[in-house]
Length: 494
Image (cartoon, rainbow, N blue to C red):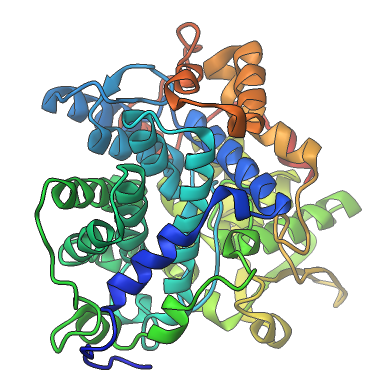
């Protein structure tokens, strides 16, 4: 069904979607879904600790302190408490800042782990169990990723909307569920959120500003606020999706309502998400891995390299990361979102961790020289695989006419090329140990994998606080744009 008007014998789309959200029960979840959800929680928390000392983190923490608020939810890293909406904003900004959290590709992309900020904040506020958190998170992934699959003509992105727009529905839905509200309140919460939180794609185009890292967090904060409004009796337009001037027509252009609201059929979209191996735009993962493979094979003298060709699916070449203006990035966000830079730095160093985005690397003469030789080209095989995979390849064309190349149809962390337990653990500890200490990080890791035994999330959230002041790795405002300069991560071996 496409964009039809609401019929009197059928519930509104948001009412049907609310029923879907409430149909997810922990007891019904397959073992592999629960395990994957725990892995996503741990990975996402690690990403948040990695951003603990960033200027965005400091700014949003100052903003939350300036606003005040009831001490309802814990801030990751500091252990301080603020209101559930403000905690969602702060924690959501941290987990997204490094661009290292999980992702999904379909009609639109998504970083669905942004929903964890909501689940933690509202779950703690309401003294929910770890089982409640896991079930709510699985429901959030389902709503969020279904929208990525079936909403947008041709996509939200191509219509000028940022993909965080889809998170307004998932965040409001799980906030309402965790507040203990019924289907009706949940539908109204989504209607309220969807009326206001459509986000422009310009925030991720051109020179990327600091606000890009808060996109999902801002939408999620508003989702919590929408749920609280509904909780206290405020109603929203239930035909928001299908109405004559509704979201499907005005924002998305088209929505497959039947697919969006279909009952669960045993497929859980959380299992279709990918875990990042590198702190870079998701579509750069495969080229990075290809470049590292070429490095390990032994690079020829740089003077002998005539061209570096990065091959990508057609979709990737239409994104800002492929724009010629990203060839010589001057900010960390632009470097992380530059196919040119990510491939070249991985090729030169055999790694792509935080160290590779330090100012000394970004502006190094040898890096700039090789960037001048880099080209982006479409690859028909990778285009055919899209969006089920974001493949990539790197070719070295030498002055003697020979070529060396490496192809990666699936990026590391993809469901068909998952990270090993050792790799996932190393990623988490690289981020978390400097903030929590290694003992604190181990304790949190154990608690995450035992979270289904937690009867009150207020017993879990103290583990999110630093046991002591973190090392002096503070990143000054705007220097952060090119100066994340932590130790080389063990992920360099991926």
